[in-house]
Image (cartoon, rainbow, N blue to C red; front, side, top):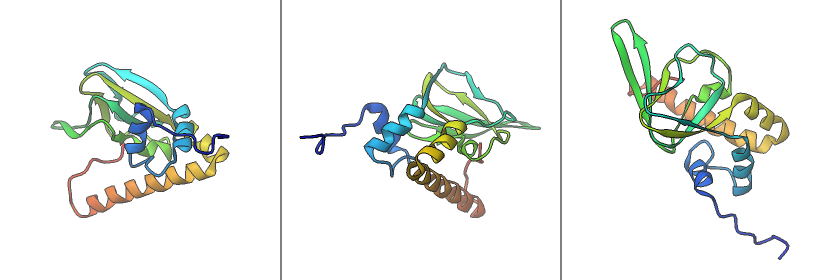
Length: 159
């Protein structure tokens, strides 16, 4: 009646967004708003998503497949992390457009939801509540990574 008790059943893609710590605090309506800002990208196995040194412009959420994060060193290439479905990478690009500290490459055929910094900044202006929730989750995620780094635990660096 009048949509008051309308079910907000989540599509598989929205369910994957909701599973991510970055978007876990969003309501189904808020998830739909964010989903409308996401760009879908597909990569084949071994395709480069972004290179070390490139300007960071977006955060990537793995919908399917796996992504390898690696860094070049004088003695070769170091695999820093393997990113599985439901996880995200490139998060610092939402805050600034500094150079990437690593390369991201599709390990297998993968589908990514891409959240561009410009869209996030626009969201902060048009819907501050959603922007605040995402920014807080992002700050917590970065803080957790920093604490792990300070404790000497293995972790991957900001991308």
